[in-house]
Amino acid sequence: MQQKQSAMPRLAQAMIDALKLPDLRARLLFTLGILVIFRFMAQVPVPGVDVEQLERVFSSSALLSMLNLFGGGAMERLSIVAMTVYPYITASIVMQLLVPVIPRLQALAKEGEAGRNKINMYTHWLTIPLAAIQGYGVILLLRNQYGILPFEGALADVSIVLTLVAGTMLLVWLGELITERGLGNGVSLIICAGIVVTVPGAMWQTYQTSGVGDLLKLIIFSLAVIVLIIFVTEAYRRIPVHYSKSIIRGRRMYRQSGSSYIPLKVNMAGMIPLIFAMAVVLLPGQIGSYFGDNIIAQFITTWFDPAGWFYWLIFFILVVAFTFFYTMIIFEQQDLPGTLQKQGGFVPGIRPGKATSEYLNKVILRLTCAGALFLGIVAIMPFFSQYIAEVQPAFMIISSAGALIVVGVALDTMRQLEAQLLMRRYEGFIK
Image (cartoon, rainbow, N blue to C red):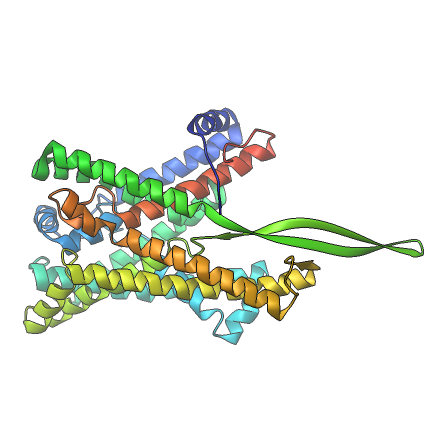
């Protein structure tokens, strides 16, 4: 397995070069401006909410703290963008899972950009009901489990749900503006920004509750997790491939050959299985809110409490299962054996066709085992943080799930910045 190296001095120089170029500087400033707008929107609560009461409840609940971490602090104020873009992420994952199953979507996926635009439109439409369901679940959770939002009535609930849905769709639009006119994937950058801004508050809270010693332990532990994530995220295995083709010149036929490789990443699924598993493992807590304060709700909230071991065990199992499932779907969609055969390529020592497919499947299975265990271990790292420092897992300076998202987004943005610089004949900074 190979791993890419990146040098911080070269990255700093690349940023300086980017700021010197007017068009790149405009892209960077546009991206920064949209993220600032997002942070202002996160401070605006929905009508009729007691923000001080919300902050007190969120500081004492592990479940709500976990939800607030990925909302960038917007959830504890129940702001108009409290759900950020996660309903859109969920809709995107659902659509990716439906494309191989539904023939109509398969046909659209093969139509090029027009088909992708149509699938993207379906994703936007699916986001609206998912955001409404999630928003109503948040209302019931806060009202039934924590006694917040005391006013009841269909009109009040509908107004809050519509506000939350509108906030989510507005953020999706802003994210797509970043992708089009800025630098990086806009939706991912909004999620990343929401996670990063919680770090200072989490550090201060850890300092107040546990002291300097535990804070330093937690910082070191968090940095070690981030280094591990970078190492495995950038690791891949090279599969050698030889190409041969025939060229006719005049009346003679010449055969030309060349060699290359297929880079198969250890963590091919990225952060998607972890996000999907988190959505599933948090679902029982939201479902429990529908039952009010009775024995069923108490049973659900007890077993699926982020401070308990059962929650993290289920989380680990779901992450591993979703990693295998999602990786196999991606591999089937890519159809590497068929693509190699069409291009006249073959793996040395392996027959083209079925034998190549079986060989690549075995390699993918072994890599996925390593990638799934890596993601599963990363997912439950916050649980072990409580044994390193006397803090709740949800109060880890930056959760391992959040760290994985931040690292993935940062690397993707760096690659896009490098591509922009290379087009202008600057030297790249990712080796």
